[in-house]
Picture 1 (cartoon, helix red, strand yellow):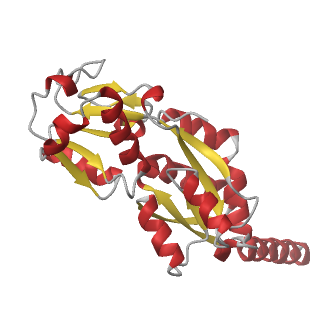
Picture 2 (picture 1 turned 180 degrees about the horizontal axis):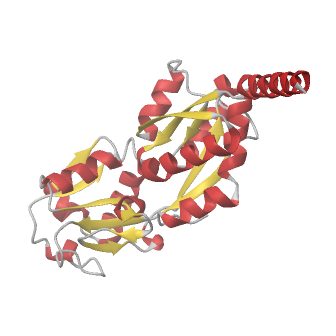
Length: 251
């Protein structure tokens, strides 16, 4: 009997060692707007697969420059679809690995109840000192914000009131801190556990800007990585999709 127990213990130990050997880590560059959902997805991914996702958050434009300079990212979750496609064309992304993991929505938000109306007329009235946006050259949500202002015909009138953040996260921080009374951010950023946070907002109609298709791509440094492949598969799973929708994204 003792011999049997020793055999069983050894088998379990070997199985555990084999599982640990198969587990791996993947380095992921994540668009700032996707911070909260990706943190949840990464935790669920580790529980489901044993692989760990090491996350770095920032602007898609900055990530592109870092990847071109040799940054050791293995997967990019961009805030647009052009950057992953460009990286694939230039040989820094794995051809055929790109797919849309989320479609983002732009929102005009203020922590002050009643400041932002549900039609965005506050922009035409202009009764505020500062409007925060992300840098349109670095962040697709910033570009969508400038396209919205142009579509509404208020871009020139509000130019002097713009406060520009490096990323959508910094744009939100400007609003939260009071540096700007309101700002264009990602709809996901005003969600907490499936519920809207306090304040007032206008969900910008998708027709006012270029669709915010957010694509993922395996980068050259992630080629052949079991963890990278597993993460890409997990992002397509019903479990990940449920989290993505909880934060106001579509897919």
